[in-house]
Amino acid sequence: MLFQVDTASSNEFKELRKTLSKDLRTVGQDVKGLLGALEMVEKKRNKFPHITDQELSSRKDFITEANNSINELKIGMDSPIVRRKLEADEKTKKLTDRGNSFTDSCRLTCSLTHSLTH
Image (cartoon, rainbow, N blue to C red):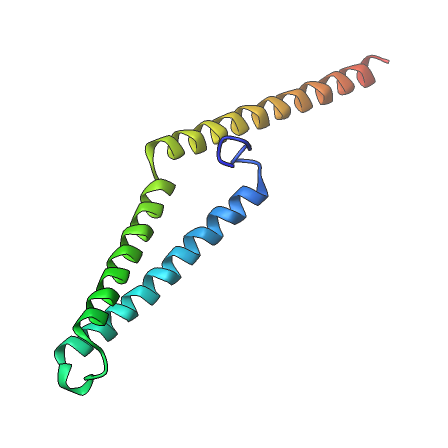
């Protein structure tokens, strides 16, 4: 989607980016909570005899993979390529807005000039 839309003008893109950032923070907090629970199980191993070492290892792996995925997505969202695209679209929008503003000013000036001379 990034290269298919004008990111500076697309409300859909802005909303998706905002939602993805929020969701990544939420998932990150959830994974942090899972890590806390896992560490508690490790510290008080005798209170959790029903959790095998293999299950504990599997849960650690899941947390590691989840954190890696979250970090990769965050890095991707702020990569140089993404930043360049966002900056280019913003620059284009400013130039377009400035051009429209200039055009509107010219129209107003022409209209006033015409009114004063006629």
